[in-house]
Image (cartoon, rainbow over all chains, first blue to last red; front, top):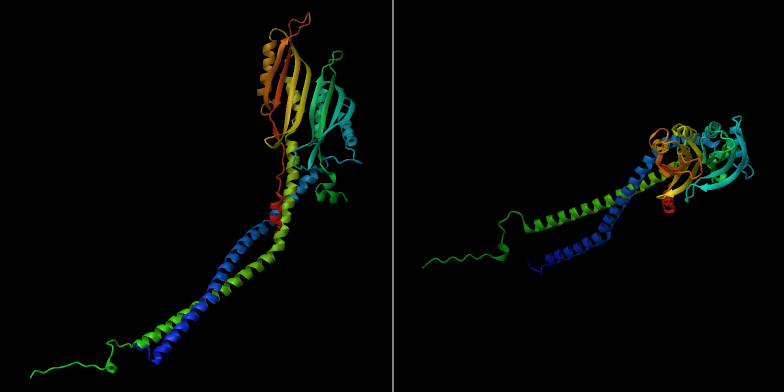
Length: 200
Length: 219
């Protein structure tokens, strides 16, 4: 090869220029394009995965709506068993209920008074337990019927404490002191919106 | 004289034995390399463009789905809240002891020679292993007359553990006290005390949603 030959010189210069061009195209066009291709492909894959998950959830909409309607209807049915305060007072309604349950059973209710309000859990629960103490005089069988009336009239009302003491002077009638517990809303104003809307 | 031959070839007369010329080879290789490089360039550019388009399309699709997804997420959250309420109501109702039935049961297991003098039930709600539980304890105090008073009291204790309606409800029934009455004329009389602990009943505890998770759901 004769380096003095013009053609050879042109060829060498062309090769050098070509290499530089290739390097520049690689560095500033091809490599960034590959990078963006990779990034976009990864992002698209991620979005498609997320979209598939979203679509899967969207497809359960009818099922969720069905469950929601079912749960709402169950709550509406039970709603009447969760007492609401009348001007902040729960006792009035509960007293009325107790006397109604005693009816003509031969039970003498002597007193109904507030006992306490219990939290179900330290976590923010939607419900509390409102308890009233009832003093009564009754025979054992009459008391059983009374308790049955209390528990049957409201499935959320329960006997939560009981003390029966035999009386020496009248063995057929006992001194009975018992606690009746009601499930009440922790904050009646913040009960589920559909219940409040239903009342309006 | 000997014949002397000298093979003298001038440089301009030099020829390769190959039929393909070097110049042609170099030019063809350069052209092929350039073509390959151009193909690579086109391939990469087209691929990158397609990936960008695909990404934009996926993003567009996600944007379109987003409002529906949000509405379903809200619906799901509402369902969780409502289910918390129904579960709380259901567990409260299901864990309620059936007192009329239990009282009749107690009456049926107490023999005629035993008189109950005090009947006490205490119910409390307490956290056991971070779960709210309904805890019920029943105390029976009474007097037993006759020679078989000991076996009769033991029979009550056994019935409270094993007979309906107590079986499955009572966890422990134990005679805590059994002794003679110290009054004159009542030597044959015994007083006893039975403690009866019910199985703790789990009340519903809502799952606490961490604020971080709630935020992520909203995204």
